[in-house]
Image 1 (tube, rainbow, N blue to C red):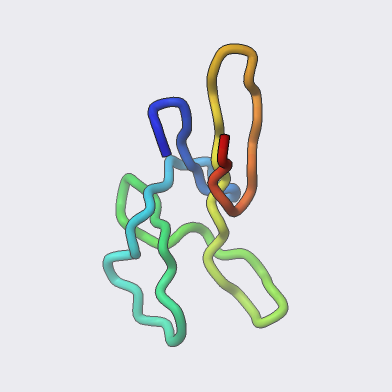
Image 2 (image 1 turned 90 degrees about the vertical axis):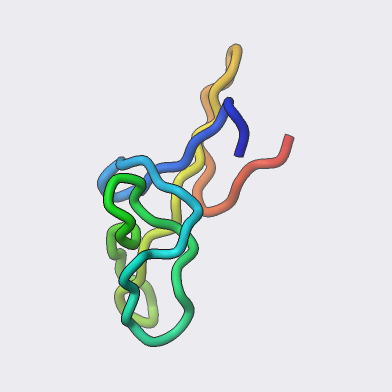
Amino acid sequence: MDELSYASCPECGEHAVAVPPRNWIAPGEVPGWTHASDGTALCPVVAAEGYRPAEPVTHLNGPGVVLVIRGREATR
């Protein structure tokens, strides 16, 4: 992401960073995003396989741009 974009947790709205959680102990793949303030995984959401951390929402800001993209960073 660049200076015109940022990511947040879609559940609580807190700023998110692309860093694995500090104390992840659940089996399976380690999430790639955490809450910036405390390093915990993004808020849980229900999926077909059970609870999992939410995917971040990427916000792009710029002149005349109001765009939110779920799950993946946008390319320009």
